[in-house]
View 1 (tube, rainbow over the protein chains, first blue to last red):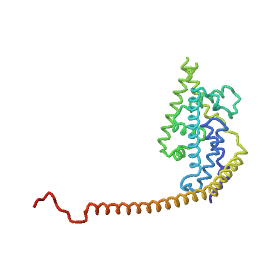
View 2 (cartoon, one colour):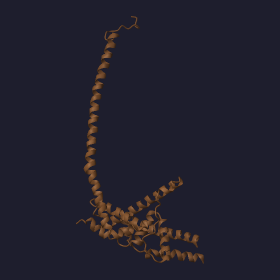
View 3 (cartoon, each protein chain N blue to C red):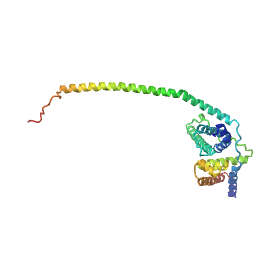
View 4 (cartoon, rainbow over the protein chains, first blue to last red):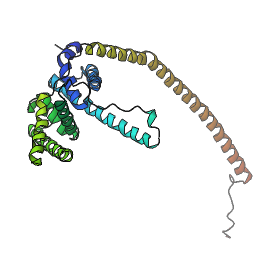
Length: 178
Length: 108
């Protein structure tokens, strides 16, 4: 029996919101992207292939929508920079920096969280996705390979390279800071 | 000394993966989504109910205008052709081209 959109939202809402949050780092943006995800799920539910896992399909939409959102934000930022060169900076509202929505009380932990996000943002999209799904969503590599439509060994390679790149970036960062 | 400190810091940052907290559940999420989907449906009904008939009416009008113009232009063209053939026959009769001509170059 086909699930209704309400049942789907109830089941996957938290997973989708959290996946989006790991990309966009802001609760408001994550909610907006998650809404986009479910609007698309609602629109194309009839076309959903039954041979694929529903969760895999929803995760794939969530990853694509999050990456689209980041690209859109980057374009908007670049456009704002160009506009500011022509002295029209006041006319465009600055995009708020990500950071809200994480209830850390410990300043040190908050700083580490910020550094982690910074390192994650430096990764290419594929490496970022492989790491986010594994480390934050606790997905198995088999599931990640289905979401990303690549082989399991490719997922493992992406995760390995991602961790290596993050270590490299953080080392360079601390060399400057310390 | 500095190298060790850097390594420790990097390690601590990467350990943060396990400590990151998930977002708090949002009880209004489905309500907002439902409102958004309903608004989209309303918009698509407007497109289907008003814009589609208007588009087809416009398409029909364009077709009628094109057919009318084509038939008018074919009438004009046939009149021009008739006029041209009349002129040619007039010129031909002037030059007496419909009569057998003598070849002035052949002196025989």
